[in-house]
Picture (cartoon, rainbow, N blue to C red):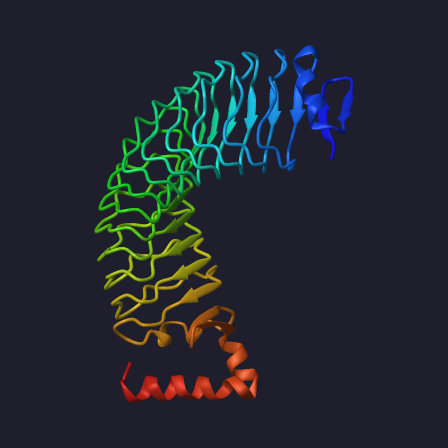
Length: 331
């Protein structure tokens, strides 16, 4: 087995784990890669080290980290805690471990991947932080979010509320929590995944929003939809009607609601799912021959167009069934 040591000028190959104990004498080493090496511990690290890769090992702890370290990648190990983090650290990726808490975070940190751990809380977040992935933990609340934050992934936790969202936020993934409401949404938000919560109402949606998944909540209405919305996923709610649909809308999934009619469908719409509503909505798509229609049978989802139904004998029967149903119930 080889352990590769990188710096700007050389690549060292060490054939024996015992040789790693001499690392501290090699002051010029700036990058170390111990990935996929089945290691249970690391030696003392070189003082000029700036990047450490120890992904997919069996580490339960890390040695003291050098003061010049800027990038730490220790994912897929068995770490239960992290020691003091160097103040120059920019990127910390410690996801897929067994961490129950994080130490004080350095002020220069811009990216934090700590998902898939056992965290119940987060420390104060640095002002320079731009990307936070804290999903798949046991968090019940989040600390104050820094103004520079662009991406927030906090899904699959136990959150009952969110703090004030920073104005620079572009994507918010907060699905699979226990949220009953959302805070005011930033004007630059592009993507919102808030499905599988307990939401009764959504706040005003910014015009910048392109993707909205609010399925599996308790929503009984949607307010005006953003003009740039491209994907709308709102199935499994209590909706009785939909607002006017944006002209650029590409996909609409509104099955498992209480809809009795659909608004005018945009010309650009390509995908739709309308099953299991209060009334059969097939008449609203009967002239949309290029539209992809999603329907579920026996746990399988079928995708077809109405043109397909007319052109293929095996599907023609289902088309006839729809028309008969349509006539029988005067839909």
